[in-house]
Image (tube, rainbow, N blue to C red; front, side):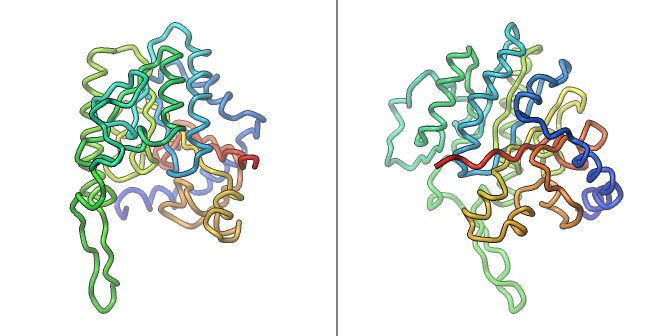
Length: 282
């Protein structure tokens, strides 16, 4: 952070604000991203904020738009929400028990299962990235204790959420992606995971390991209204949450629903583009 992220953000803040402010606020930004995705891109990373169903429900449409734009190209969906190397074939595997020690979101959540099935209909296989250790129930995983002094309050951090765990998981993600790339040199890989895994400027970033001109990072965020209501806070404060730049520094103005930073600025912003999704209707 001290050597790279903070200095770049301070130096480029005016340019980042300008890029966001001059992004056309189109009616359908998701379609715009799919339509204008450079043909050179073979790694599309989609970062999400967990536990907002509208993001999960947006992913099938994104895949449909990509298939429409690239009808003859092989497309493969990779995700942290399935176990490492697992390929979805239309059903939860027989050896998975709903009350077992494995807690895999992509098996238990109907929105995820709908996504895998929709991808299958589009001739897009869904492949898991998450190492099995990280699929275990939290009470079976190691934890770290941070702090425990007069100045720092004791706090337990699960292995998966720790920097050590993020690095371990991302290394496993990379192993799967590189294996499949050797077998599919021209395919479009869509990598769907939490934003902490895929942002360019995140610790041990997965996306930063690939050629910049062949990589595009899209972040899907809930609406500011939705974040405020969900977390019971003011919209002014909610606007700061989840934004890739605000993960690291609380300065600059970024109120736009659709923001596009362009390749020179993307590594600094953490993403090529981000979309605040509409608040779901009741």
